[in-house]
Length: 448
Image (cartoon, rainbow, N blue to C red; front, side):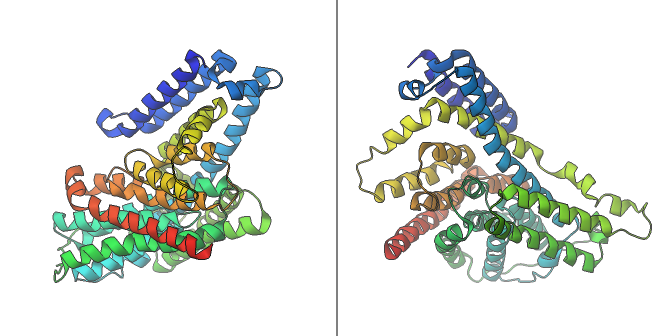
């Protein structure tokens, strides 16, 4: 293997470190991912078969340029499916939020007991993230915390547990977490099976931490803060019945996407784009009597599109295409062979690999981890390896505050200190994560 083969590894590792250190470096990870993608494909194109492992290079038949073009097109197609799905899903969620649909739920939370409020918020975050996504759910719930909990120290505990609940809730449905979405779109898992096999471990992963913290918070009460501010946001002026319509419509079309795929066998992004079209048409028809009404102009989907987090979507594009180089050149195959050397019998060997990946996802981004793992193994659909990977990659990020998009969002909104989270929450999240792992293993043994 040539210098180019090892240079690709070095470039990827360096880019990965820059992504992990996004906040200290103050460089958006999307920029790093795009540059890394371009550099890796360039090295591969210039070096030819010299950038590939010997086994992969010998397997090429025909002209290298045709091989390169075919692989770029193939990986761009696979990546595009994920990118378009995320674009549609994130836009629908943004529409519901902008129209005040989520207020229909959050305005009814009136609990004053800390333990009672903890469980209400946790269950709500778990359920919402299963339908929406863990990032949006966390942002919405942390915004709610500012209205009902005046003490910052208390909010840190609640925000941390929301992160755990949102990550767990997103892991067990095909539309709730980016990593599960990736596995579903790639045909590694089916919608119904992933829900059946990971819902119980996901529930266990929040029951244990919440039970531990409930004992700590027992007897505490919360006094609602005085709030004299006038809410002038566009959502505050949307009629209640329109909020309910948009909420039901948004949640309804998201739930229907997996059903659409099961019936038609079309790619999920076709379903989500059709769902976005429905939401767009309905919201356009809900016009005021005065078309010049400024409030309704800001609620048009053409205006809301500017609020969608496009940098995250661009990041997925860059990182998935970069991982594609490692797959084509044979790096991931070699890594899979080395992991297969773990001295354990099946299925415990692959249970161990999944568990390690979950812990690693608390340190580095779980998207490239899962993307790389998908390129390393060729197990059939609904294999236990993919099922457990969905759980581990989705919930393992809760171990550290920087380990998931939800955690980073909560950290930014509430200014949660990394060391504080590590001292007070990490051990609780780790126990919950391992409890869910044990639950999945026991469940698998019972079924099989």
